[in-house]
Amino acid sequence: QVQLVESGGGLVQPGGSLRLSCAASVSISDIYVMGWYRQAGGKQRELVATITSGGTTNYIDSVKARFTISRDNAENTMYLKMNSLTPEDTAVYYCNARRRYGAPASWGQGTQVTVSS
Picture 1 (cartoon, helix red, strand yellow):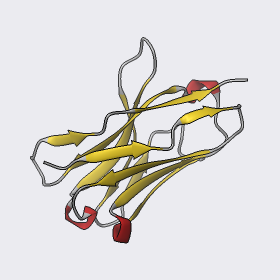
Picture 2 (spheres, helix red, strand yellow):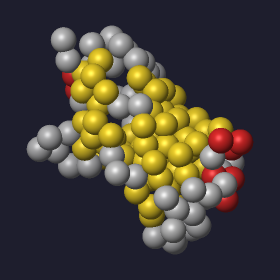
Picture 3 (cartoon, helix red, strand yellow):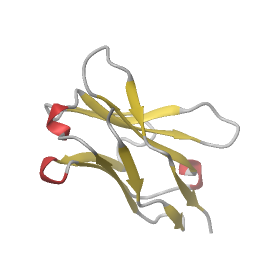
């Protein structure tokens, strides 16, 4: 029921930065948890970062010092600021939201991030 629209992916050089956006069709204050996943070619989709309606954030170890997940309730948008990008960050990034505990998750369409020189 939650529609998610991603933007901000693209091609960057190693060491560069990108900010991904995920615009939701509902007030994100009503969403239990939102997060970003990524899937590199030939790899399993992995969780990158999450943020709850209360503002609690979690990151996988490989991005913790470089990525920041945040949300703007007024714009109903979640962000992933990615700094110091490396080729290992190359993947399709997916926005995810679970509106209530135990409810089905919603997914964005995915946006390609390519880090290459």
